[in-house]
Length: 154
Image 1 (cartoon, rainbow, N blue to C red):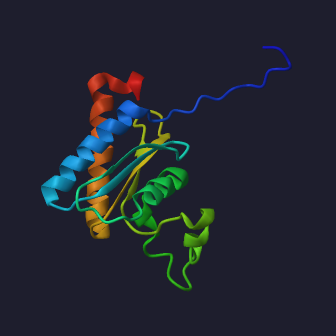
Image 2: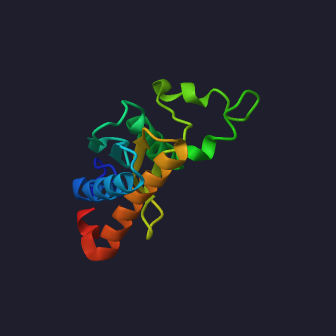
């Protein structure tokens, strides 16, 4: 390597095929619980890869939940008890241009081998527990794809 070339770091990230696996699994779970959802899947840099608005879903915050989960590497539900007045994260919802979500429904997708965040699934329309349940189903869809040999494409 010449002195004029900067070293490169490869960052694992979710691709469109991985996002499609997440979307399919999340849509299936939403249908099972009979709650139409908005489902957003982002890559490790918080860029949208896939989005679905199921028939009857409210226009809500799925994309911002996915953005928060990928960018902060935690489920959005992790903030539930710390964002109230006097809490250590009070006011955090105003960060990132107001995109930071503290309501359950955003879940990061973690590479089981490296521990790196590959992206995230964000869901909205139901109760926060329903949104998180559907997002977790999306994450599991990606994990099944990884276990099924699609890792090279994810």
